Amino acid sequence: MNLEKFQQSMYELIVETSTNLPKDVRRAVKAAAVRENAGTSAAMSLATITNNIQMADENISPICQDTGMPTFKVKTPVGVNQLQIKEAIYEAMIEATKNGKLRPNSVDSLTGENSGNNLGAGTPVIKFEQWEKDYIDARLILKGGGCENKNIQYSLPCELEGLGKAGRDLDGIRKCIMHSVYQAQGQGCSAGFIGVGIGGDRTTGYELAKEQLFRRVDDVNPNESLRQLEEYVMKHANELGIGTMGFGGETTLLGCKIGVINRLPASFFVSVAYNCWAFRRLGVQIDPTTGEIQEWFYQDGEEIVFDAPQQEETKSESRTFTLTAPITEEQIRELKVGDVVKISGRMYTGRDAIHKYLMDHDAPVDLNGQVIYHCGPVMLKDEQGEWHVKAAGPTTSIREEPYQGDIMKKFGIRAVIGKGGMGPKTLAALKEHGGVYLNAIGGAAQYYADCIKSVDGVDLMNFGIPEAMWHLQVEDFTAVVTMDSHGNSLHEHVDKSSLEKLSQFKEPVFS
Ligand SMILES: O=C(O)C[C@H](O)C(=O)O
Ligand code: SF4
Image 1 (cartoon, rainbow, N blue to C red):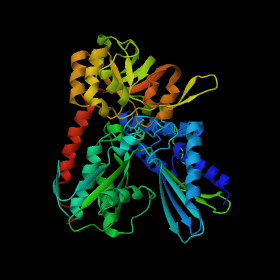
Image 2 (cartoon, protein in one colour):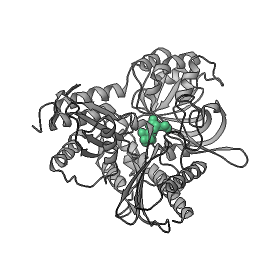
Image 3 (tube, protein in one colour):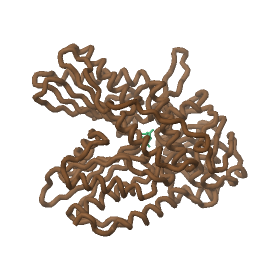
């Protein structure tokens, strides 16, 4: 095999997967955008999402800054050297990271050190299979950490909030799947796609669930019971009202694929892999002699054009405020859940490592009246040593729940921006201190990168690029107030109302 060419093909597969959302996924997103009512938060978020998808195409830059756990599935004809393939994939990963197509995402679990090139123990994941065909089939999925955190595994029988007892039968499985969508709320950047694995052990159950994510969104399950179940879930999960980013709305789920394998008599697992709307997976057919790409998978069909939203659709029903840091308590107290905020001026990124650090250290900058953005961007340094933002959407905020309230009070921070919302501890601190939580659109990494006009500095680089504290100069960075300083939380509200809706699906359906 021409290894140089093969490595180039793997590089193309990585770049395309990170930057070019597959057509079957685009069709599902488009259908969701069409369903939402103009002027609602869901419609506006979907407009941002579709805009972001197109920006990623044009910029050839990551759709989302979290380029995920690279998982390759490679089928090779007998005689092809899999060791060489592995080596070529490693090289292609290094190059894609260097060129800002992947974020350095491989972190030592004990020391916290980022390897910087996406290689490390267990990264990337490469699964090989041998087959009788005469070509190589290489597929890649880039599944982000936020949606990965929303995966869930049920052991039947069990008791489920809202749904009661789930037994060891098809109806018990139905309940688990409905519950899995409920428990994800907006935190995995809904509307999402789920892959479900029935049976196996804890490991093979999850593997089967992830395997389902390689199926086309629009395929039809050949197993009649599973086909019916997939259809049922698609219809009814969308009645939960969680909606895009958990803002409420018509579409909560974009795809549901279910597979089944045998189990042990004692075990009965239902494993669910949740994937965000930024469902990045592609595949190629490769000639094993030349190493060249012969065909792309998931990319058939017409070009999908997302219509630019009409004037009345972009006109929000909400009040709009403009803020520039330092922000006063008075300005914050004026904001209510549902308001749109446009931020200009300075903001600082801070995510997991920074929040832990700030608990018992001084801040490297004065944070009084400032804005913290839960974000781990993709950054590139030019020849002059200047940093440039390549992708910069929000990360899931709930992970900072143990720290956030204390840190806001300790340093006088007035606003935090993230996604998916935070819990009661933060809500209480916002009320006491005069703070606000702003929800940005998860995955819209190109859209937000465009709002960042310059990088003015960076602290705590020892935490690695995604975890460092970046000083950003922004213009019209738009987010929605979802938790205010008066004790109101849209997240709490949507959680409650979706749980009520979930309980409507308590009665047996598949008996
Ligand atoms: O790590 C990130 O940047 C985001 C993550 O995928 C998340 O959804 O929280
Ligand atoms: S930020 Fe959202 S869109 Fe990006 S990887 Fe995480 S869950 Fe997916």
